[in-house]
Length: 102
View 1: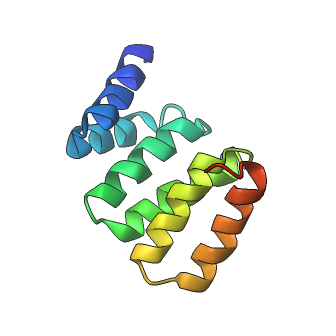
View 2: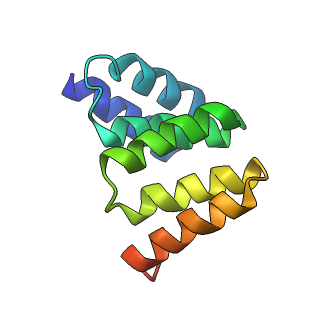
């Protein structure tokens, strides 16, 4: 399982959005409470412009690990892309409180 998780993370870092999303979504049923997997799937979906999926996955990542400002920042980006500006601002404010340099 760790190898598949690492492969998803590497694919995300390399910009292989399809592969990152595919690997993360395959692992989520086995590790449903792993916030990083939801983040990988959501960040990749955002890059692929799959906004409903991005928002769903990034929201789940932020719910599972609410102290990760980077998860909240990506969720805010997805909400802006979906033109949910009021919600995006609220999420961005939470991210900023957690980590003003994000």
